[in-house]
Image 1 (cartoon, rainbow, N blue to C red):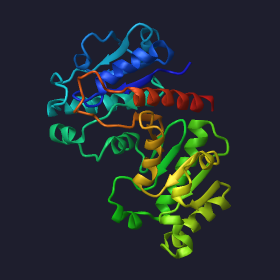
Image 2 (image 1 turned 60 degrees about the vertical axis):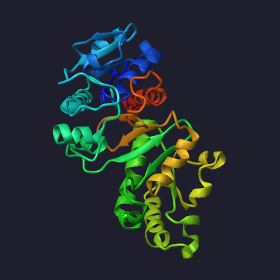
Image 3 (image 1 turned 180 degrees about the horizontal axis):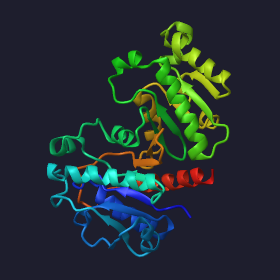
Image 4 (image 1 turned 90 degrees about the horizontal axis):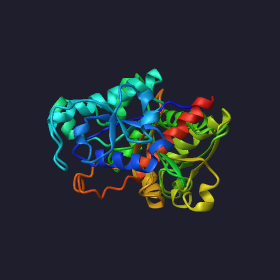
Amino acid sequence: MTAPIALSCGEPAGIGPEIAAAAWQSLKGSLPFFWIGDPRHLPAGTPLQIIDAPSQAVDVSRMALPVLALPFAAPATPGQPDPANAQGVIDAIALGVELVQSGAASAICTAPIHKKALKDGAGFAYPGHTEYLAALAGVDRVVMMLACDALRVVPVTIHIPLAEVPQALTAALLTDTILITHAALRRDFGLTAPRLAVAGLNPHAGEGGAMGQEEIEMIIPVLEALRAEGLDIAGPMSADTMFHAAARARYDAAICMYHDQALIPIKTLDFAGGVNVTLGLPFIRTSPDHGTAFDIAGQGVADPSSLIAALKMADVMARARGAQ
């Protein structure tokens, strides 16, 4: 049996606490996980039990949400982030990473954070979750994958203006992204010979240079070099024809050149069930593909589907890694 999954609480004024409780109600003993945070922040009436060690979560999860208690500086008011709780949010992530690195947890699943509150309250120096996790792990480059049952997508460039994409898109970055994705598909998804499809940057993948030179000058040489190393790669492909059902059946993951090229198709196919996976870490990390949703926090209407999917995917990945 794999160890339980660590779920860091995220921003306590957001929907994280309520979807954690809802995820436990849905999964209970079928997928043991434990929540790291301040028990005061969970919805009133949540069946919970304080645990001293992750190993206790397996038995406890059948009856209550296992909680590894981490006292925060202040209570939480839904929809109103309190900078006083910023250090607690950061500590919950760090503790989850420590536990998964030690083997006490099989993976870490992270609830959404509010970066401004972390910066205001604790001087958080990272652009987001992913960069902080990379720093804790001591790795220089990680890759973001969004995944659901119908599709896996990896954007090469992420949160930058569209006008900056051509300059940011380098041969080294594309090569690293493809190699990290390929290795993760083998190690964490159990695919012995992953099939990758790579989108072009320009419409119609540049149409032979008529609509841009990036494919000819950079993307095609990178793909040819990687094919020579034995990777199964199709592309560069026209992005407007690579996401229908028949096309998706021909690859295991799509490598896209920029944020919206990757995220529009997956959010169209499965808006509620998409999972954010960080590839390239020495441990497994998943996260729901949404934010803190302050506008609905505390109202009991938040959809836990993405968190449930993230926990299930973390479990599948942990089992695949463990089998090796």
